[in-house]
Length: 234
Length: 268
Image (tube, rainbow over all chains, first blue to last red; front, side, top):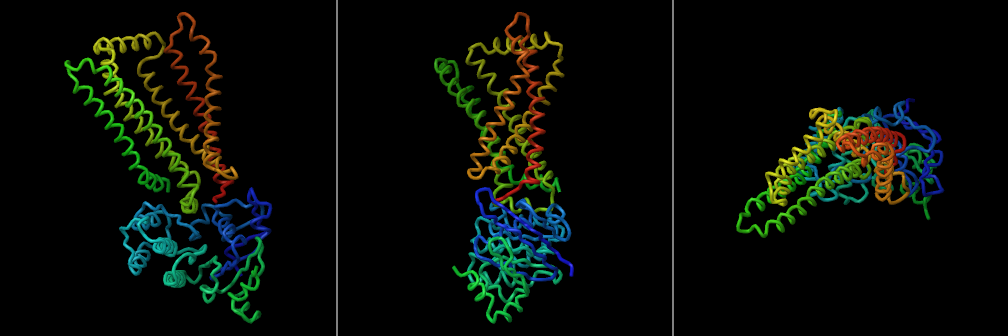
């Protein structure tokens, strides 16, 4: 099996913390899967995602995407939706579409405008004039309009209403190619449970469990959400 | 990719550039109108009003140049080290292209600001000073005469001096931008209070550059008071020495900024 993403003995220490955010994390994610990166707050999900995107430097360990260390070469392969608003709020939606078209060869402006139209988001509107939910939808549309090998979505449904949540999940499902991998980080498991092919449970910066979602449900005899609550109960 | 990055950098900054320079132009126009609207009957008031205009003008000129430099720093910080950095650092471009695109556009903005300031000085400051001295013709003539004499007494020609001044000024400006970038980047290594860290780093860098310049200028400075020593030669030496030191530190700042971005990037 060919792996799209491989991490070996990955450690990340932050300056003010004694405990590592990632504590020797090792895993290998194959192509063509929707994988849930699940864990409570502070478990290391976002740190791992930031390392994949080259936004953090690992303390030690190795990380490769399609055989390459995170860098200029891997950025065309990854479509990343961070947990925050990463777009310039003063820009108009159509300017953002043009921005993505300019920089990503695999970006489809047509696809983006179709999705904007279906959501009745005015391309002339400035991002700062849109509601929080609409801003998140614009970000998701821009990310999902790319034909990437690896989609990394960090908490894509946190902080939006249930209707928007449904739209976001529908968009994810209908816009990624079969050969692409989706790494979806969330702690709202019940909402994404049915989407996932595989689950990675992460705690204190290490992988607690990495298995197909169906297998976990069968072996444990309960839903992923229930299992998650049991494992991470306080 | 560099051209595209520069295009978006320009789009993000041109309005601020326009506002800042419009302010300089407006101040200059108001100053000129105030000066020329006074006629002989209000001669008593000229000195006071002219002095007031001069002070306000001086503050505006200093303020606009300062504001542009501050904005350049804020833009660099916000675009690369806050939430927007999540997009910029995940674009399929190299770190070198990221820094260069900003450096070229920001330097251009500062150069435009300086050119407008210079034009403003020529059209307002000289006549204003002349009015202040109450002998316009004599003041300008003697000023130009003195300058020409000083230049003639050196081994440099006027074109050489002009080219030297322009090149040295450009080097100083680009190095200044790079030291801002470097300070902001070094500020990111602070555990908390990263903006304060960046300001402290900038003050440290500035003091270091000034100290090195002073050391290299020491031999010329000691000659400054001696008989027969042309102050113009000192000025030329000061400008060229400062530029060489600035160039050296500019290159170091550029390398540090790139190195930190490539190998030590840790976005919050």
